[in-house]
Image (cartoon, rainbow, N blue to C red; front, side, top):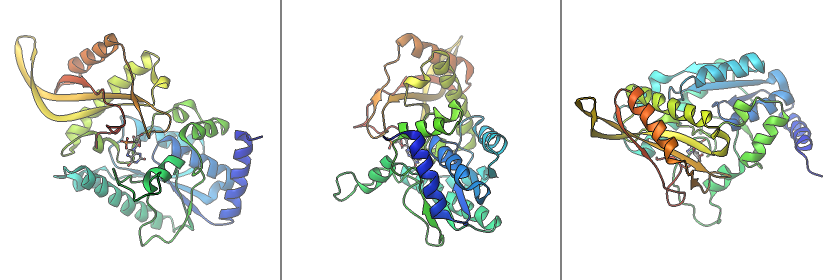
Length: 319
Ligand code: XMP
């Protein structure tokens, strides 16, 4: 009989066999996949593992601190935290095309990662939290010529200069199975149950040019939205919820005055693997409450919309 405890034991044995006495680096993103991969690897090979967290400055509010606290303090995993936000924002200045944004972030991510990996003296293996849907979505499920819809920055192999073997312990799993494995490994619910978050972070939730000011504004909106979702007890019923900062200013009225500020969109979907998704049917009263809080509490936003597009034809992220 297949059980998660059995999978865990087998995965640990396989990792030990694959890695031997070698050293492994793992890129941590704060998301479920890389987190579970890291903890599983740590169980298998202990101090032979070093995690590198490249902080692009486009995380949600408070997330970087949480990643560091969880892995370093709670799991005792060797963790390098590199704050590279200046670099990323600098490289993104003036960039508006979604694919160029993704590629810019992907390229820089690899550059910074390699730098840190050299600093720790190199490694024999590179671990990634690649899941089964990542594999098929980037290879094309039909086996026909694949159409690249978005260049995911966590799939696609190694850059030419990196001569390391890949370790992908989650390659056969779907998201719900990764979560079950995380629970089996004793990981806290706030990591295991966390909504997916894209590698390029908030950059792809800011159509148009990304600036620090816009990212800060979006973080405020996002925090309020997720706070209300948690308070309403809806977090676990939703696959993914987030805000998008729209590159448009609209007219509003506040007190006796006219405002001319930015708009945002809220998105929430249900899904089992991210490949298809349905819009989450919030009560209007909930949306009204969130909208009122955002417009009242976030200076610079005067309009809130709700994205009602399913996938397909929409994608989950806006870019
Ligand atoms: P889309 O927007 O293509 O997203 O419908 C499907 C799922 O993938 C996540 N996503 C990413 N995850 N790196 C990631 O690790 C990426 O570059 C990336 N782009 C999208 C998205 O959040 C959704 O869960």
